Image (cartoon, rainbow, N blue to C red; front, side, top):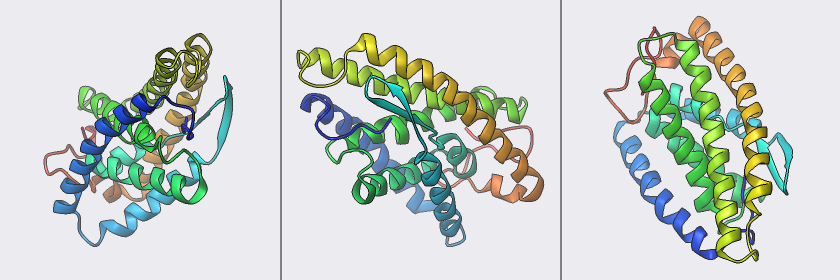
Length: 227
């Protein structure tokens, strides 16, 4: 799902940066106002775990790949703003150190995985709050992966059409392959994320109450989950 340099139309790259940067900047501001020293090591460990999970890539056709995202787990443990910050750090390190995703395309990668995926998660958790925690976790995980992949596919198709085929990938190829494969990958992420949440609720329920960046998020340790 990481978009490399040279694949996207420059106009689409600019749009990605213009949308992603304000959200990321505001999330950093919110987290900086509420974070404490105890949360920093927790965020670092979580970021490392998600980083490793994202390194496992699956070819999905049309020159694209799929992988786990981890945004739902980050959102449940850290809240929406905390998840945006953690996902941003992961994507920046992947781009600058490991070359996973291009520097010019970083805005789009941030938009898909550090903005759209956490928003999808937060929306599902808010809509299903007060219901079964594990159902909400699985649904949010699946939808976050699926919507992030769909956004990526639409961006690739839009670049192709906008540039007359010079950039991007033709929509009839990339949209069905990305959506179909990530619908399956989302199931895997849902199972993994739900398993982790179930485990933490037994051995470390306090970790489900961290919620960095907002003071009004719902406690995930009981029946309700944070929006």
